[in-house]
Image 1 (tube, helix red, strand yellow):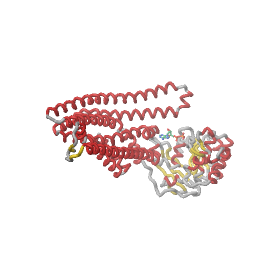
Image 2 (tube, protein in one colour):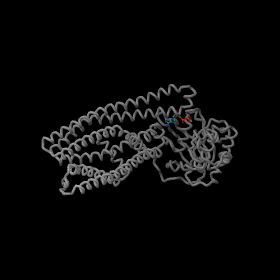
Image 3 (cartoon, helix red, strand yellow):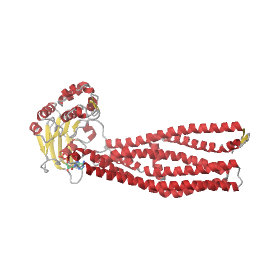
Image 4 (tube, protein in one colour):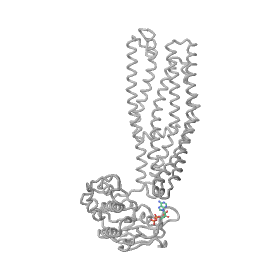
Length: 550
Ligand code: ADP
């Protein structure tokens, strides 16, 4: 628990800076002190209510008229409210900045990590960690900060109790130890259940993601009932963990509530036996009740913190692992508008695991040529493209451009355009869809040129606002039109090498031929993984991955 609290503190300092966290702590200490002051001023208030015209302020020893004492209490209450407001705003600032920083650090890590690492990760784990788990981290930070306030208020209250009657105050403070001892086991159990909850949550996320990405198949095979059963099972497991957590925490809470009343009564009786005044007894009763109320609330928060806090591990795991696998960046971007290079693979072995997908592969792509990569599904076409894209470093052999080995893969990618199998369109305008990956400033002229080369300019001209038409839902465009828009997006980069992965599969033969011929005329070095005869027919070379001894 303490170790976890320290991790949260470090996360807050890393995200907001030591100054912001210290400012919050000063406000919290002030709030605690003012809480004690208000409580101590209850004694003169009771004396005023009992009819005294002059009262003595405890500890300071001031003799004040009744009106001034009431005014002092009102002033302390107002100041406490102001400080509490400042502490609440400051705490919310620290909480939100810490959560955002953790979430963005994980997501940025994913964006900058080696492809070989990212390709192995379950997408749903990343989604769950940066959505559901981070919400729990947010709650844990709120609890952590609030617990700080409660601890200070509790200390201030205990000091007031000790000042009124050292013996009774110490007894009341000792009763808090019982709460700590009894609560320790429950807090540990809450942590275990929190870890289990995160595991269940990851499983539930994976089931939801898989079912959504297989919707067409589920409907086609009429397997909705089976998937609904799987989802219900995963949700039930999550509920079971949550129920166990509530069972283990709620019982203890109820027991401490009862203990509070008994202890407060017992202390007042001891106080009476010791001959304390009515004002002191009332204040003591308030102190004892408050102490146990705060202790109970603190335990509840500690249990909840222990339950939520393991979620930070899921988020941090992504951040730290992605940083460990961060892609090394060389000198930076390669030359813009560089002439199309000749690419060679010499004895390249590459893959995602053992055995490798490509073994001892030799391949020559002459400058400005069109090379078609063919082979049955699973033969390694996409893997070969990943090697050419500099995403998958070969475990043996070399990839060269114009005879020079590609060392800086990030700079190499600045010269490339890529069109994946699945169309990727973002909610936004046509222009935004064309420019987000351009890597350079583009003019309207550049965009129309790219659209013409992808045989989709006439489609965009027909749209109500041309380049500024918002693509809310992509049904405005057919599958083939979307695919050509993706080709135009790659061309907007002015690539000297264009890599296409089954990127013309949704086009009719005539359009496909038209697109490929236009791409050829651009002079770009072209590598296309394809099943289509039309592409193979107009290519300069064909690499057939069916023969694994290539
Ligand atoms: P193709 O594009 O010809 O269909 P791929 O290159 O996609 O073939 O796949 C070749 C082999 O590599 C397959 O056996 C596939 O399971 C494996 N593979 C592809 N991507 C990954 C990955 N990210 N992790 C592990 N194995 C992969």
